[in-house]
Amino acid sequence: MIRYVNFQFRTAIPAWIALLCTMGAFLAVHGDSELPDWWWRAVAYISATHAVLFRLRLTRIRFVSTVRQFDEAPPRPVPYGTWSTDYWGPFHRPRSPFVVRALVLMALVLPLCLLWEPYPMLGLLWVTLEWTSLGLIASRWEFESRALLWLGRQGRDPEEYYYTTVSPR
Image (cartoon, rainbow, N blue to C red; front, side, top):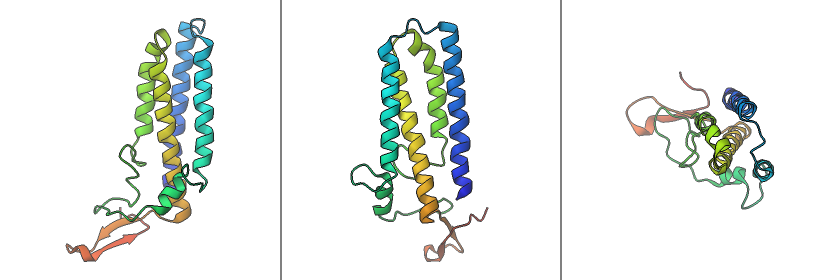
């Protein structure tokens, strides 16, 4: 489980550093004189709002808590050979590098946003923060609840399936 938490940080932090370096390079080349002040305020507001929501999601307050949602979720069937927490929702798989893909897309769209309209950049920023926080919340919940299970089997009969906290690989 700790390996999974480290995996989340290993994929998120270098990707964020790469994004900041890319943003700095484009700002140095293009200059920030053409960017209006409201653009920077909008980015600051989105980041601050998401930081507050991220903190609230780590609590167990009704309607905002992701942890509570994980606690109350009914058990789901887990396919053989997968982890029990591989699927948290239709748009998010914690063990898939979705955050890195979103950051790469942000780095590609960033020059167009600086030269033209910043709305796509703000949307991609929100999506990236959302996926990053969901992955970190899921990994923390797994670790605290010891819910990370590997579904294996001893034979072909589904009744012989078993859960273990250690991957057989």
